[in-house]
Each structure stands twice: as structure tokens, then as C-alpha cells.
Picture 1 (cartoon, rainbow over the protein chains, first blue to last red):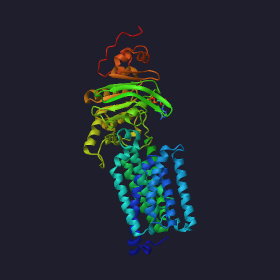
Picture 2: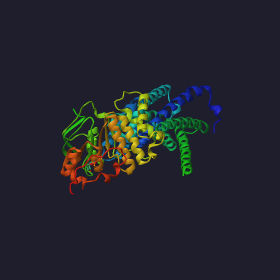
Picture 3: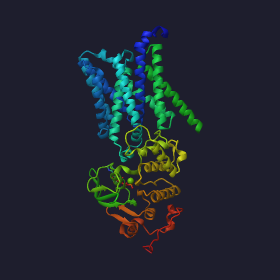
Picture 4: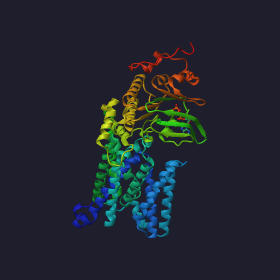
Length: 277
Length: 258
Ligand SMILES: Nc1ncnc2c1ncn2[C@@H]1O[C@H](COP(=O)(O)OP(=O)(O)OP(=O)(O)O)[C@@H](O)[C@H]1O
Ligand SMILES: [Mg+2]
């Protein structure tokens, strides 16, 4: 247990904590927005698959000495496109194709980084390192998050239509393929950003948890989206606080907060159901 | 020129040819019922009309100011998942998206349009309810309101009456009749209720495994296919869903097999 006033020196707050806080809130926002679509489209696996691909790419980039984010984002976007196509056309069925594809990417990455003896360097992408992000990373993170949020808001109605009833949306002339791709691309960007902070292992649950929790509580799409955003951001803040106090990994602390909120929401939903009977 | 002109359509799934040589037209003030046994390709034809499935042959032309994405569609089976959190209002509004420029959120005009359609179908009181928690009949009305939001010209309904009790079904018939008459919207409806079809529709398209028919209701009742499908001639009283519409039943000729 830390005494908070010991760690929270003004310098620590302004140089490390505040940027991490801003980047974290931005990414949590994106993650919860896209999480709703992923859960409702029954493709939570895409988030998970992309995080594997992202981790693999980071490993390769590190082994070759490239800038990690700038290489990883385009590759993961490409992977998102391929995963969508695979799950549309594949005889194997969506999740099998995703599992094969993403674990292959992961294996290639680990192979490359162990060859270059970088396993310890890349292992912090496994668990995330929000407090170790450079100022440039933080700015990059925030700008991309804002782009994701703006695009999401711009296409909000169409994203709803496409998730709710794909055939009807297509009949009214919406380019369903484009919007599916859009969701996948936004997911890809969010996954990579989240991976820097939360780690590859935990990013997909950062997307899924708030959405699932919100769906327990709300029955309107708009309310689900708003609730998911609120849950996601507050769980991030609580998790960050917890990790400072008891000195634990941030990613894991945030997910544990999400888990607690989810359990509470399930209880509320259960009690409501009982009372209705 | 007609809204839709189809010539020698071929409908096919990989190796299975469902229909070939299908020709028909849909005029501006048409009320066309599509009938035929299960698996004869009615839903497949609907998907082709909407462009959800590619044609495997023949010609399909849209005219008279109708564009393909201006058709209001009511699916036979919507693939909407259980527990999808969406309110009635959100579902109806999602019909307003065709041909709309990119801008965030719905405009006032779109919201007014949705409210008007909900009023027309008597579901205004359900606006905030969760779509999934409604009864089948209520859900059907919501989807019809959404279809109406999507069109000012042509409704395309794939078995809108399945699972509805006779009373609700007859109500839906009169709503459709009203929409057709008052708003001048053409209707294409797939149905298994042949008796009601011949009473409400102007034209009938019968899709059979071996034989097809396209023409007016009167001709259909005289045709060999129609006689077989209609079974023994039906007296107006026997059509349970046709009562209380406040409309006259067309006079029928003498019973065929009397
Ligand atoms: N996606 C598909 N892939 C392969 N075959 C299909 C597919 N959908 C339908 N079929 C086949 O095409 C034929 C026509 O199907 P369709 O759904 O058009 O029939 P329908 O006339 O609408 O029947 P119903 O009255 O039961 O709704 C059927 O034999 C069906 O098995
Ligand atoms: Mg059908």
C-alpha cells in the first residue's frame, strides 16, 4: 500500500500521470463505442484476433528496429480487412478463420522477436505500460482517438442500421460492406492504441466488458452506447487509482473494476427481473 | 414505363435453379400479390428485386422514377437477434436512411416522418419500448412503419401476415389498403393466403415449381394454375380475414365446380 501523497509529486502528476490519464480516457471512450458494435454483431472475436495480430506485428517491428505504432496500425487495419473477408466467405466459419489467422501472426511475431533476443523488450506490450508512454505517443493516441470518436458519431445512425438488420440496410442502399469495414478499421486503430496502454492480453475485454454491462441495464441502443461510455471511462479512472494505491498493473486493475461493475449490473438486472415477476 | 419490368428472370443458387423464364411488370398504382408453394422461390425473387442477390439471367428494369433503394422492404424473417437493445423509435427511424447525405444524427424532418408513420400504424405509444419485448404483431407493425419510412413509392412485403391472428391480420390488410389508396404507394406482397390475395390485389404473380402465372386476379381465378391453387371456389363468407374492412368484395362468377 502506497501513501498517495508520496507518489503524487507535482512533477510526477504533470509529466506522467496527467498524459496517461488523458490518453487512457480517450482510448477507453473509443473502446466502449466500438465494443457495443462488436458485441451486437457477434464478432467480439475480431477484437481479440486483432490484438494478437497487433502484438505479433509489434514484435516484428521491434526485431527490425521500426517505429512500433506507425508500422502496426496499417498492418492491423489490413488484418481487420482480411479477417472480415475471411469471416464472410470462409468455409471454416468466422471464429475458426480468425483463430488460425491471428495465432499465426502471433507466432511469427514471437518467432522474430525471440530470434532477435527481444522477448523482454516486447513483453510490456503484453501487459501494457501506460505510464511509460512518451509525450509523442500520448498526443498520437489522443488525436487518433478523437478521429475514431468523430467518425463513429458521424456514422452513428448507419452503424445502428447495419448492426440491427443488415439485409434491410442493404435494401435501402446502404453500403453494408463499407460500414462493416469501417467498424473493423476503427476497431483496429483502437486495439493498437489500447494495446500500448492495457496490453495485448486485456484490450479486447476493455472493449467488450462495458458493452455487455450496459446491455444488462438498458434497452435502447442510444442508452446502451452512452452507458457503455460512462462505465468504460469511470472504470478506467477507478482502475488507475487502484493501481496507484496498491501498486498493481494498470490494465489488470481496470479490467477488475469492469468485472465488479459487470457483477453489480447483473445483480441489478436479476433483481429487476424478480421484481417484475 | 412501369416501376419494375422483369423479363425472363432466372433465379439460381449455385447448382439449384429455382425459377427460370419469370416475366412480370409492376405499375405505378399496382397491388401485386405473389403466391406459390413453399420453396418455389418467392423470397428469392424478393431478394433479387432488392438487389440483395444477383440475378442469374434475364432483365430487370426500374423506371417511372423508382430507384431500387426507394423500396420499403418488410422481410419474411428478420435476422434480428434476440436481446438486441433497440427501441421502437430507433428501429422506425432507421428506415429513413436511404439516399441521405452524410450527416450525424437524424434531422427534424426525418423524425417527423417516423412519428407520422408510427401514428399511421398505431404504435406511437410503444415508441420507447424495446423492440424485442413486443409481440409478433406489434413487431410486424414496427417493421412496416420502418418500411414506410423508407419509401414513398413502393412497398415490398414478404409474408407480412405469418404468425398473426386473424383479427390483427385483417387489420394489417386494411392498413395496407389504406396506404395503397390514400398515399398512392404501390404494394408487392408475398402471401400464402391466396383467397385474400385475389380479393385485395390487382394482379397476381403465381410462382410454381413447374408452371407460373402473371395477370389480373380475374384471369388468375380462371386459369388452370389458379383454380388448382385456390382449391374449390371460395365464397366470400369463408374468407375469415376479409371482414370488417368496410370494402365490397368483388363479385365472383358462378362456382367453377358446381
Ligand atoms: N441461401 C440459400 N442457399 C441455397 N439455396 C437456397 C437459399 N435460400 C433458399 N434456397 C432454396 O431456394 C428455393 C426457394 O427458396 P425461397 O426462400 O425463395 O422459397 P419461398 O418461395 O420464399 O418459400 P416460403 O413460402 O417457404 O417462404 C428453396 O428450394 C430453397 O431451398
Ligand atoms: Mg419465403
